[in-house]
Image (cartoon, rainbow, N blue to C red):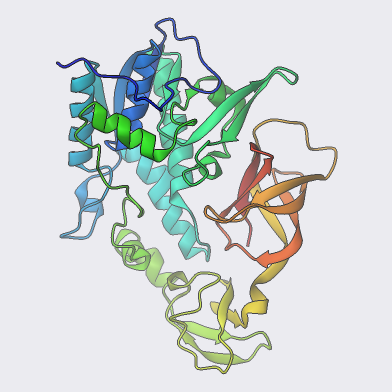
Length: 384
């Protein structure tokens, strides 16, 4: 084995804040991609005792015939193993298929059939890549789980709590999908890439001759590589799909007038303009779904604007915000720039987000995440 070169000229190898390794054991979650591979490399450079682990999430029978996933494939497992062999560390493949079906795939389908537009990557991070691996960490007596996420963590000495922070590379920041982290999670997490830019990560991978140094990133949902959500749901839950999300029904405009017929509510999402099938002088957008009446609601673009968004299943990472409404910036979607808002935590893990200026309303089932500067306060799921 060729000894790996841990650094490049312009890439720091230390997590921010630095962690004293002293040979502590780390489970490094390895997807087979370049990010998690370089994260593993950096952990070794910090002196950790590292074991690479790759989660097996599903078999090919979950996919339509002739399709292959762009992640979580056998090739990805082999790439992760190849990197571990080069680094001289052990690698294990963990069978999470049952948990993936129960915590990600089934809720994704149910959410669509209930008129929502879910983000399955959030549940995958929440229940598998973090909670599932944290359970294995405890079982194996390791100190940390490490991932290739572009985020940072910091310990606030004044409050005695951990904070989740945006990544140094704003274009790669993934803090939005990790708003569900707890204090215990953060105390046992490492994010080696938080202070790096993507170009530095690829440079390190190339310098160490990793097989995946130029591997393309996956941009789709791993178990729906063709992006055809409705076909997948119909295959995966055929009886429920026939009874609920794919039954035709009326399209109703903002005056209550019927404007046509939809092909099943699960085929549409809030904010959609194309594919509605209605000729109108002013473009019409999907503004909502009345599941009880099986109605698709449409209106001109102004019907999408909202100044309040209600959230459920809210998690606060750090800080005592309950006694009052507090100012924050919020992201209404993964790619959106944060906007100013006032957030009020309510009972039953709900919250009301009052936006400073009206914004295009996020679809039910999506996530809204609140920030205090670069620190993630927390987030929740948009209610219908």
